[in-house]
Image (cartoon, rainbow, N blue to C red; front, side, top):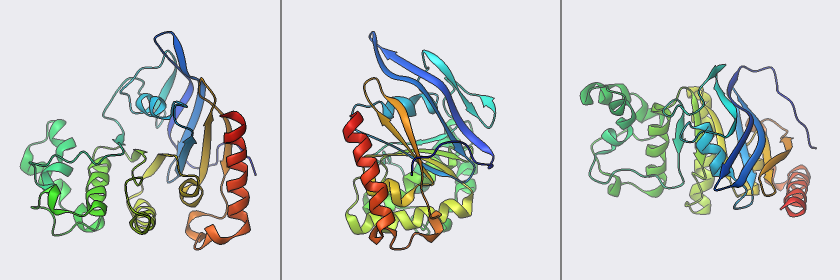
Length: 257
């Protein structure tokens, strides 16, 4: 089932031969990944394999020792603020209303507060948040807080979102609901997503492709294309094909560590 290679969709984000060294230790080595328009791609690996290091480079928050990052064909190595980047915790500011939390990226870019609010307002219904605009984060459920954080990420993005385990803190039922919701909204707003996860089931269910980051230093040795398409995966986790993907991934991770 292991495959590689780019499809014919427009390329959104890519890293080319990226290496990062901290304190004389190589964390990731010679990594090349790509995200095409409309794709959801997962980066799956054990703790300490360098997933977050790679995301920091892709977001422009860290500069690689070797290699470069391209956004829609334009080099953006070391240029933060070009793509949306959401960490595991929602990091909503408790003293700000929800609308001011989600419009914060625009304010930081120099947009006036009221103008940023007006620009964010139409997306509240799209993200299932209508009616929460003037509430505070403490008044929202866990799932609603994640939606607000995802909306903030979208408003900071140029159509590309980097999500670092965004669903890991949710209970199983809420996580399943968020998976279905995110895939639906991603299609409607034309958002391309690169997702870090430790959850093999989540990666298989959500992804068009999966990169497996293994070893120390971390290297990408395997790329899996997941079939059927995401839109046709109802009850896919109950099928033999799902178990075959899971078995292959676990064998690779256990072998490579």
